[in-house]
Image (cartoon, rainbow, N blue to C red; front, side, top):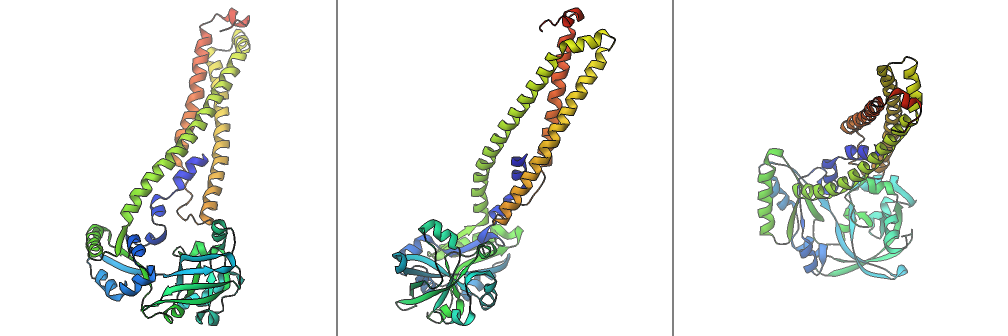
Length: 380
């Protein structure tokens, strides 16, 4: 029942819409190959082939486009001498002015003083738990790092200090975060010569014109080799394959457990009836009709079924509900509890049918024997 609840509560569309596709059908971004080829990485592409307002306006002019959202990131390489880490590629998330003022609510250690952040000499660190899993150490308030970046004309460097550490709730509330570091967008723009930090353009469309918009965006990406287009349709196709495998495994395990419980119940019913053969024969000898005996055994079987269904539905549903809520609170927002009605009905029908069939077959088998033989305790 827990497995069935998990499957029914799993929102396939919501799963595919995680991250950049939450409100968009297309993601126009720099290709991995272009990032590798450009000697300055992300910041080099942003300076030389920016996804600026002109590109956004070109996309907005396509018939069927509802909106374009720009995601911003600043590509860097950083040195962390304290942990003997040098030349690590990463992204700095540019905070808007509003985010700078509100991010203090997520600080678990240190501070998020707006004035210090705006100086460009301080950064915030998020997802420290993941950093510890990868590197074996955690960033600490006061740690000093050196950022290497392309300022639009040459490689430059800047020494920054960790001002504050953000809690895990920030990660759950901000799915667009790519790297460890956060800094005000205006502070970043103050030490580079190019005007935009756009790294992704998320395009939302009218449903009936999605295919046509996709063709136009593919043409645009083909004309600019540094770009690539990712689509929600492709994501859904890939996710469908993985979900088929996952759900197949879960369903197979659940079916095995269900069959095992049904076989156990069958064994219990058969043993119960066989061991009571003399008792049933005695009841028949003192006047109880075969129909009455059959009805009595069927009633006992139904009581067993009701108890089994009640326990399974109650405990299984509660466990499934808790599992859905735990996963949701951990950031799996595609989990939304739904009671698995089809499975519950099918499971109940099987549990009712099996005991009834076993009882009827057993009673019919006993009726073929003479009453005297059954009273003597003869084996079937």
